[in-house]
Amino acid sequence: MCGIIGIVGTVSVQERLIESLKRLEYRGYDSAGVAGFTKQGVERRRAAGKLKNLEAVLAKDPLRATVGIGHTRWATHGPPTEGNAHPHRAGRVTLVHNGIIENFAELKAALAARGRTFSTDTDTEVVAQLLDQELETKPPLEAFKATLDQLRGAFALVVMIDGEEGMILGARRGPPLVVGYGDGEMFLGSDALGLGPFTNRIAYLEDGDFVAIDHATARIFDDAGHPVERAVQTVAQSATLMEKGNYRHFMEKEIHDQPDACQHTLSAYIDPVSTRFAPPSGLDLSAFDRIQIVACGTASYAGQIARYAFERLAGLPCDVEVASEFRYREPAVGPKTLAVAVSQSGETADTLAALRWCKAQGLTTAALVNVHGSTMAREADLLLPTHAGPEIGVASTKAFTSQVAALTALAATAARQRGRIDAAEEARVARMLLEAPRLIAEANAAEDHIRTLAPELARARDVLYLGRGAMFPLALEGALKLKEISYIHAEGYAAGELKHGPIALIDEATPVIVIAPSDDLFEKTISNMSEVAARGGPIVLITDAEGARHAPEGARVIVGPTCDPLVAPLVYAPPIQLLAYYVAVQKGADVDQPRNLAKSVTVE
Ligand code: M6R
Image (cartoon, rainbow, N blue to C red; front, side, top):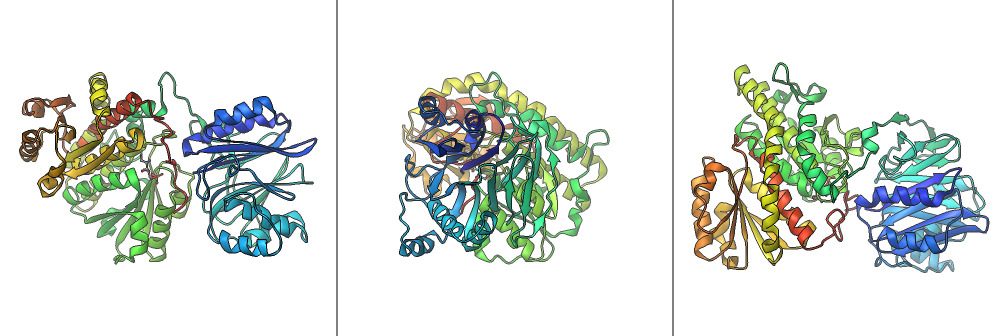
């Protein structure tokens, strides 16, 4: 979603705004803009498309200011044109916005009735007009509060007001907004990553807060307008780093980061010396009779994979539902249900709403998140961290495997706490999980071979992914990865479902990717592959050495390490990610910032 930044600085702001917006690019955007207080008054520069277009505008017409705001826009209301790009301006007000103003139409009608005219299709311009109207009768902070009180929806705002050259206002209702503390300078931004080049001293605004920053201070108010303090934290250097090293894309780097990411994550759940599971926050899973996982996209597939472990290993019923459906379904949940929101960002609007719904039902809630200062992390009763480090590629890779690792460790914890496994078995499972990072690294060894398969797959219009057991949700994830970054239509199916419909799609032009390390279901999957082969469907089999011996004639085979089924979803994730990656590269697609996608979906 949109990225926003505000700087009350002492040196030229233009380069700093661009540097920060580059760090926010990963959130997904289709136009960008900046504004600053210059000697001539407030000036704006905006451009449709990528930041390089805005840089070209600035090269011709620099913004000479030290205080300014910037924005990357992910279009919601109105196409991604220069005219709809932020910052938006009305009278004395210039502002940028992330989120949606749900009642913009009625506000617009009321403002229009009072003679205000609009020049964009956006909901954002309504806020600028409304604030400008409030400023006719009120001082800035009062006018800002009065404006916020009239807005419905989930949004974050950063605002400049003519005549208030040393001040920037910000507000948070839903999407995050952080305050950065510098040396004689202050910052506002969508996240700590965006402020990384300037400061790592960060205060996270609470939902409903608004703030006024100047060169030295941040005055923060809660939604009732009372002054409040928000703790200033020094965020880890790693949370502000974003380097791709020698890799061509962040996604490629993040695929290769996975052994480390999983190891760091597992170390929060397993004591490597005693090989005992030691869940964060002292979580006692024997107190629950059911797990309810809520998540979106890739995170929901991580949940679906974990369901197998929770039920098979721990005998603990586990439901997994996409948060966007769960929150509106009025599900029946028992009091001994542990609700687990799984999210890389910890900010996904639907997942956050589902978490809040569970909390309102009186359930114990846990946030299994990668961003530990996120809203979910702060609102849930328990924080279950993943330690993947910042994930910049829009397509989730290391966050996904870290989620699977953490959830599998929790399932094993539940098995032990519920008396389903003894200490010896606990130690065996713990050792197996601790071995997984090495096996993930081994799986990456197939990379060169996978690259050679990409040209053929890149010609396909449709691709099917098949898997059984926990490999089924991995097939769903494989299909999502391919769709997201290569724009090839792909679907994942449970292999046994093939003959109930999807088999009608099989022909010579429809590749079928089968994820099937040799386990006790492998023979059945061989039969499904034969059904595909009999109809001329090209097969790519992702399996281990034993499975490779049974590959149908003509199948392309990607061989991964031999491993226990419990860790197979971790070990077989890199091949499907690499396959999608190299197909996207082959097609010349924008791997790290696929069209229409946002990294963190903070609107419904
Ligand atoms: O930040 P979250 O984990 O809550 O995000 C959930 C989904 O939006 C995310 O996993 C999405 O599906 C990714 N683009 C997948 O690669």
